[in-house]
Length: 353
Image (cartoon, rainbow, N blue to C red; front, top):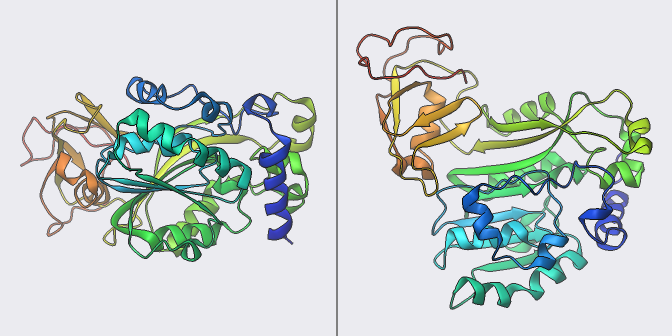
């Protein structure tokens, strides 16, 4: 049986006292910092070097189109992603970071005034909370108060992921989103692995099986999620490799929206979506996920779920969606072919959802 108290103490010990920095990690599962876009790389130069030195993450789940929004970083550590998002939301926005490791939050808080001065903000737009992802209510985070929740390779560490995601969708506004990166496995992993401090701390023992993740979201009323990108994780440490055997691990960046009209299959309603080219940093195209690239001003046939994602979220002002759900043409056709009658030859084929 999973012992949440033991797990938490193990993780606190690993990240608070055993690891002195990213160089001490034994695998690349919890640390891939070289994949920021040029725009984000420029913003990252404003973040203090001590924050970078203590950064642990498996990707860069930094959301777009968040100026003036309220963001929540689940497992913020020393605050690298908080300070990146602080610049993106601007002085009218807000970023909250939650972590259970005091040593990590102490570093994050120490440099708060430094960053606000560096960003040119008259007052802080970030705050840090010591607490658990499974119980955001005790931190005063209210229902439907968050526009976007992010997390960078932390949810795998939780012994109760169902509670984490339940809390996330509680605090998200309608149309809000969780945009996160984490470690996934190609199978269900033995519970006994969580007793190994290295496998747990290196983000392997708690890796989610993607099908169980899908089932969990479905029980929470979220029937569709999207994979933005993924990559295999190399296990180069001989000791760790021997322990995990044939299990394979992947770093995935995933997004899921809190939109009540989403369905569990991609249905064809003849809708067309056009990206306006107005998301900051994305003038030529916008990638919703790993198979939906919207070229600026080029109409694309989309399923009902995709139409809702780009129209009923904060992305709505950046897209034009033509058509509604009053007509139904069956499941969305993923195969290539001519543009359906009535949409015009300029409408590109949609991607499989």
